[in-house]
Amino acid sequence: MEHHTIGLTLKVWRQKNNKAKGQFETFNVKNISTEMSFLEMFDVLNEQLVAENKEPVAFDHDCREGICGACSMYINGRAHGPWHNTTTCQLHMREYKDGDTIVVEPWRANSFPVLKDLIVDRSSFDRIIQAGGYISVNTGNAVDANSLPIEKHRADESFAAAACIGCGACVAACPNASAMLFVSAKVSHLALLPQGDPERKIRSVNMIEQMDKEGFGSCTNIGACEAECPKGISLENIARLNREYLGAVFSGDSQNA
Image (cartoon, rainbow, N blue to C red):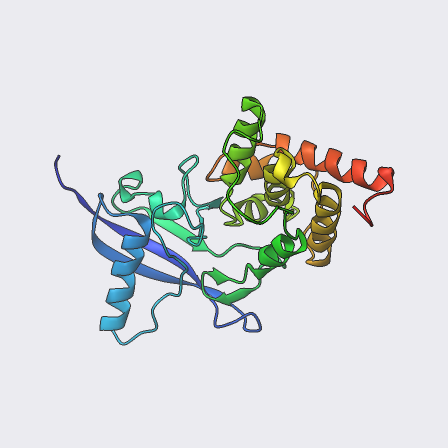
């Protein structure tokens, strides 16, 4: 395969902390291989800045394999960039042409305060997960795998919901900064399985209450969350979450489930 290099203009959001006023800074990077990932391109930029005795751009990353959800960048107006069902670390520079300008921002949501530059605090997601609590299981030897029969379509739907990596792209893409797709994926994961049944009612109520406490916006079924989710989490999970929540509230069991 022929090897190509390109030059780019980057407009990157810089912000010292959540209290500071941020602004865009413009950088020019050259000799970017089209085989690089987007994060590798940022590595090149930061090496260039360090060589010039300038502050490197702070950005979040970990696995660089599309698994951890840390690489949260808003690229040219889209969460994780232009590729469908792809995280930022999986986006490659062959998407861009020589001379292109790329605008890179952090997630924009009050519930995700900026820590520095492109890094936001997503601990609100952690607190929602914690509000969901645990599942009740019997201790002792491992249960035989076939002792809890689960219909295949329910197992498949649960597995699809469990694919959520908690990156926050749904919140960043939503005009309301709603976290409903994230919460619905986490609720659906367990609501579809018998292991999650004992705490099923209280789980949905507690997680939605915590979501509201964190200041996320309301869901108005725009669908941007599903469109930008790197794991393709379905809007059907939001409908399921609504059913779970209403069923728990109107049953009167949400306080002692």
